[in-house]
Length: 156
Image 1 (cartoon, helix red, strand yellow):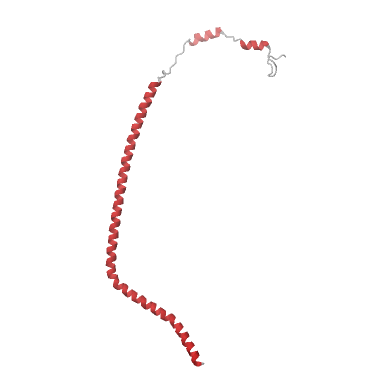
Image 2: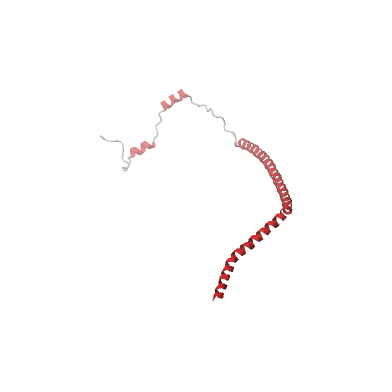
C-alpha cells in the first residue's frame, strides 16, 4: 500500500516536478468536439458603439433634462410670484380693514364719551360718597374711643 500522494512537508521528487512542467493535450478528443460544434461560434450581441456617439447622446439627453428643469423652475417661479402677490393683496386688505376698524372704534368712543360723560359723573359722585361714608365708618371707631377716653378723664 504505497500511496502516490506526498505530504505537504515532504520534499517533492524530480519526477513530480517534471510532470507539472509538461502539458499533454488530447488532440483526438479536441478534434471531435470541434467537428460537433463547429470551429466558429456566433455572437448575438450588438457591436460596441464608439465612445463619441455615447458621449454625444448623453450630452443631448443632458441638454433636454436641463431644458426641462429650467422650464419647471420657470413655472414654479411664476406660481410663487402669483402666491406672493395674493398674499400681499391679502395683507393690504387686512391692513385696510384694521385701519377702518380703528376709525370705527374711535368714532364709537367719541359717541360713547358724549353719552357716558353724564353717567360717569354720577358714578364718580356715588363713588366719592361711598369713600366718604367708608372713612366716616372707620373713623367712628376712633371717635368712640376718643369719647370714652374723654369720659374717663372727666370722671377722674
